[in-house]
Amino acid sequence: MYRSSDIRAGISAESGIPVFRGAGGLWRTHKALDLATPQAFRKNPALIWEFYHYRRNVAFNAQPNKAHFALAKFEEELPGDCQFHIVTQNIDGLHQRAGSKNVIELHGALSKIRCTNSKCKNIEVNTDSPICEALKDRGDPACTDKDLPEINVNDLPKCSKCGKLARPHIVWFGEHLDANILQRTRELIETCDICLIIGTSSVVYPAAMFAPLVADRGRPVAEFNLNEEPANEEFQFHFPGPCGTTLPKALGYDDSSL
Image 1 (cartoon, one colour):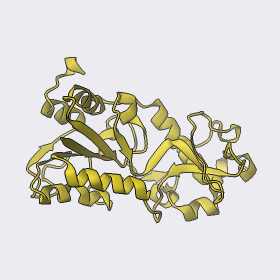
Image 2 (tube, one colour):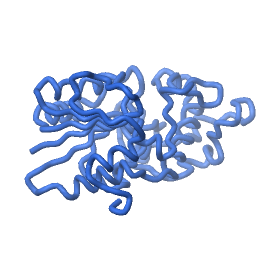
Image 3 (tube, rainbow, N blue to C red):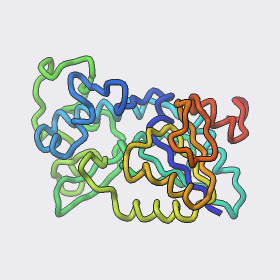
């Protein structure tokens, strides 16, 4: 038996993770979405690394909330012949820190860096803070770009394997999802018995089509988000309100059990 859960940015908002897609979405004077592109990194890698240094620190200092812990506990308590998978667009790693085991990260992870050398492409875990000396005390969104001295590109994070410039291991706008990860996700969508979609705006593809595909197979879909109205009338269940409140209750947990 398979259970696939599609969890997106909203579940981490209650842990203090900014949701850049809505509510203005600014970092300093920059639109955060404009910084999440390969073109922006090529133009100004130091600025982009400042932005992601800030995001890394926020994520590393955040704590999983009750929704994260409820999912981890639900997975742990499933019978041995059942499987539970989380497919997430989040990059903060809070699912794993809450104890979830089967997590597919569609958009990468803040805890990883990737070599920009096309002959290397090394991916490695790096949770150092600061990730390099040049980024120490940088990334404050209250500052302006003119307040701080420029960072030399040679002082930015480097690949431990070949020494070339490293970048955040994040899927930026205009880049393709990893083909193997996408294929594994499709397999889960085609075989799962139930799908939970949690904290999603349902606007980013291909992830936005996952739950409707499950519904098209006649399988139940449960939606958890702040909106009073369901995103799709084909979804059988809709739980409006904060995920940290609605999700644990729907899974049968109270505050004392998490």
